[in-house]
Structure formats: C-alpha cells, structure tokens
Amino acid sequence: MAMDSTALRHLHFVFIPLMAPGHLLPMVDMAKLMAQRQVKVSIVTTPLNSIQFQAGIDKEIRSGSSIQILNVQFPCEEVGLPEGCESLDTLPSMDLLNNFSIALDLLQQPLEELLEKQRPFPSCIIVDKYFLCVAEVANKLNVPIIIFDGTSCFCLLCTHNLQKDKVYEAVSAEEKFLIPRIPHRIELKKSQLPGIFNPGSDLTLKARREKVMEVAEKSYGIVVNSFEELEAEYVKEYQRFSGHKVWCVGPVSLSNRDDIDKSLRSRRNLSYGNEYVKWLDSWSPRSVIYVCLGSLNRAIPEQLIELGRGLEATKRPFIWVLRGAYGREEMEKWLLEDGFEERVKGRGLLIKGWAPQVLILSHTAIGVFVTHCGWNSTLEGICAGVPLVTFPLFAEQFLNEQLVVQVMKTGVSAGAESVVHLGEEHKSMVQVTRENVKDSIENVMGEGQEKKEIRERARKYADMARKAMEQGGSSYRNMSLLIDHIVHVKGLHN
Ligand SMILES: *[C@@H]1O[C@H](CO)[C@@H](O)[C@H](O)[C@H]1NC(C)=O
Ligand SMILES: *[C@@H]1O[C@H](CO)[C@@H](O)[C@H](O)[C@H]1NC(C)=O
Ligand SMILES: *[C@@H]1O[C@H](CO)[C@@H](O)[C@H](O)[C@H]1NC(C)=O
Ligand SMILES: *[C@@H]1O[C@H](CO)[C@@H](O)[C@H](O)[C@H]1NC(C)=O
Image 1 (cartoon, protein in one colour):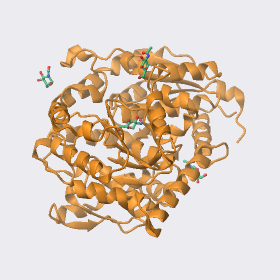
Image 2 (spheres, protein in one colour):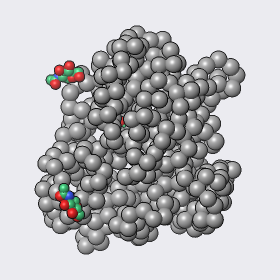
Image 3 (cartoon, rainbow, N blue to C red):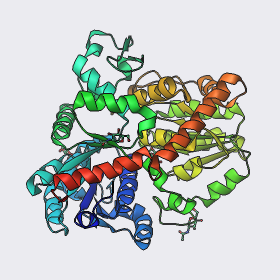
C-alpha cells in the first residue's frame, strides 16, 4: 500500500464534527490519526470548542503533522441561545435543541466561504451525520463527502433492518421481538428502541432524521469508530445491506498514547487529572468502580439517588462522574442534604463536571465501568479491558447494551427497561434499583468462574483493539484504504 507521496501532498481532508463531546472528541482523534499519514488535515469548529483540544493539536504539529484548526463563529445570538453556548452539553435546557439545530444550519454560508479559500483545495469532507448543511456545502464545492457515524456497525445494521422490516410496529411497547436478519439472536422491546422508532415524536426532529438518511445515501461511504475484530460479521452485513463502503478506523481514543495526550485531549491544563491518578494509585488493581452515565445525562434525580445508594452498598471504592443536563439542581440539593458524600468519604470520589475519562479508565485500579453505553464510552471501556455494567438511557444505547452483553459477553445489564425520550424525562421512573446496581457490579467484580471469564474476555478485546490500531492492524489498514479511495476518486493516482 505504498502511496505516492506526491499524491498525498495534494490531499486535504476536512473534518467537521458536531459540537457535542461524544461526537467532537472521536473526530478530533481521527483527524490526528489521519494527519500522521502525511496528508493535510483541517478540523472545522467554533472558538469555544477548539479551545478544548487546541493543546493536543499543537503537540501534533510539533511532531510534524500538517494539521490545523479552522474556526467559524457560532451564531448563538441569532437563534436565541445564550452567549457561549456552542456545544450540545452546554444547552441550558433540551427545549433549545431546535434552536441549536437552526444555528448549525446557519453555518452553511460561513463554511462554504471558509472551505473555498483553503489550499490545497479540500479533497474530502468527513462530517458528523447530524451536521446536515455540510452536505449542501460539499455539493456546492463539488467535494466528496464521507459520513462519520458515531455508532457501531452492530447498531447500524440493527437500525437498518428494523427500518426495512418494521417488525416493531406489530407489537406493544413492552413486548419483546427479535431483531430481523442479524447474525445473533437479539431480543428487544419496542420501548427500548431509539427515538427514530418512536412514533408521534416531534415533526421537525422527524424531518431532520429523514434528511440524515438522505445525506448518508449520497455519501461516498461511512467511517466508523470501531474495529473489524469487534464486530466483523456486522461490518460485512451492513456493507452488503446498505451498499455503503464502511471503513472501521477505531478505537480512535487509542491515538492518545501517553497520559499527557489523555489529559490534553480536551483540557488545556497539563496537570488536569493528576489528582485522580494519585487517588487511584492508592487502590489495588481492578478494585475501583468507575461510573459515568454520559455528558448528556438524562437520568432523573430519583434514579441517580438509587444509583448512589447502590454504590454505597457495594462497600467498594468508586469514582462517580455526575453531569446532569436534567434535574441538576435537585441532585445537588440531595448531595448537600443527604450526607452521602460524608458517608462515602475516602472511598467515594465524586466528579461534578467533565472528567478525563480515558485517563481514568486506563488506570489499573479500575475494575468495572458502569456506563450509559454511548458508543464512545463503550469503546473506551473496551479499550481499558474492563467489564461493563450497562445502564442505557436513550438513543441507540439499548442496542449497544446488547452488543456488550449478548455478542461480546463482556458485561452485564443493570436492568434498565426503556428509553427516556428527549423532553419526557419528567415522565420517567426509577428503572434500576439500588439492589440492581449492587448485584450487577458484584456479577462482574466478584468471585466465581463465570465472573472471571467475563473479565478475561474483556481483557482480550482490549488486546484486539490495540492491535487493530497498530501499524498493519485492521483499523490502520482501513485508514490507508480510505486515503487510497480518495486518491482514486480525485484521479491523483496517475
Ligand atoms: C428558539 O427557537 C424557537 C423556534 O424557532 C423560537 O420561537 C424561540 O424564541 C427560540 N428561543 C429563544 C430563547 O429565543
Ligand atoms: C490545573 O488543574 C489543577 C487540578 O485541576 C488545578 O489545581 C490547577 O490550579 C490548575 N492550574 C491552572 C494553571 O489552571
Ligand atoms: C465520551 O463521552 C463521555 C461522556 O459521555 C466523555 O466524558 C468522553 O470524554 C467522551 N469521549 C470521547 C471519545 O468523545
Ligand atoms: C477494512 O479492512 C478489512 C480487513 O482488513 C477489509 O476486509 C475491508 O475491505 C476494509 N474496508 C474497506 C472499506 O476498504
């Protein structure tokens, strides 16, 4: 796969991530990996988002990569968002989601003007599937577009087949049904399906989702943060069913090789995260529970309180990341009044806000990851080689749970029953009791053959992930094939 270096010098890959931590960071990692292949790379985002990862990019530039950040101003004011609200996780309320989408649409013109000026002229745009107006930009500038899909091929295939077969239409919300035409026997309930299968949801949202599919249809392919060894059958089947090229180039978080990369990843402060590492150093290997239900947490305070009590009941050390988009104040009030923090003092560390997750997970003291199964977190858990306790909340997280529990068999379910739909948080109830929390954690951390096997499998997947990313590994080669593909599309190969 020796690529002509003259051809490479003419290539310019432009990455346009969606401004939400779970979407932005994997694309930044991917951009860094791409730039290490001697092609020019740009990441387009807004000033407040780029501050987050500027230091990491500077480090890449010092090591010889041709990579730059291009900023566009985010039109907060025009759409009625508070100033500085440039990322989905900083929305004061999910009611403003639509305003955020409108702001994204308004970026079409500025993006067009910005990209037009770039030299070499962009050869390919890699864009988050939810950043819709970029398809128009690419069309206008006549640049091939590749979609970044933030999920797994397992999830893509299940969703694709469900949309085709509509088996869920014939069942009631709580009835289980089999996901059609996939390599494993997976059962779900209708109430566990992502929002796209939730009839009666918001019409603008529905229109946007249809547009997402339309854009995907016209793209040159999909790039996925996953690796062949994790879900080979699903990669193959999804390509076959959808007719799209699929390049698995992950897990991209492994591009952050040392602790400096890991904490720089999204912080300016070099010593950030040190305090957690020190705290973890004081615990024995595989003894600490790490809990994070995601940056767009949608669990209600009552549910979080049960989770807290479950952690307390394990009597094990834990780190709990609390980021509440929903019911934040109520939760803070409980923490103050209940005395929880006092009771778990010494063995329970609460992080209120952003946490250097990759850094924490890679510490040998971590023994289990309690996760909402957002894809990026799931992968980070896989790379850390720890078993997962799955606690899905919304979107495709219940599908990811099935991948972990039924296909990989590297985790157990905490027992969540149904999706908490956007804007319907107040209607949801406690789904996972403190006993569920305690028992599921014991089921992967405790003694016994079955539990040991779960832990061993988790370690094996981490090895496979590492190998996939090494030179010659499957993800490394897929990245080369992607670059090759664009060389051919652009006619640069002769
Ligand atoms: C958000 O958008 C809606 C619909 O476009 C608009 O009516 C509303 O005023 C906007 N919100 C704010 C806070 O401006
Ligand atoms: C960096 O972070 C550490 C730990 O969070 C904090 O104590 C320190 O004050 C920060 N330093 C700067 C320069 O912001
Ligand atoms: C993944 O999401 C979690 C929260 O959901 C965040 O803390 C973490 O940094 C994200 N990682 C990536 C790769 O974006
Ligand atoms: C990615 O790599 C796998 C295994 O090396 C290969 O079978 C597959 O065709 C590659 N994908 C693309 C889109 O080239």
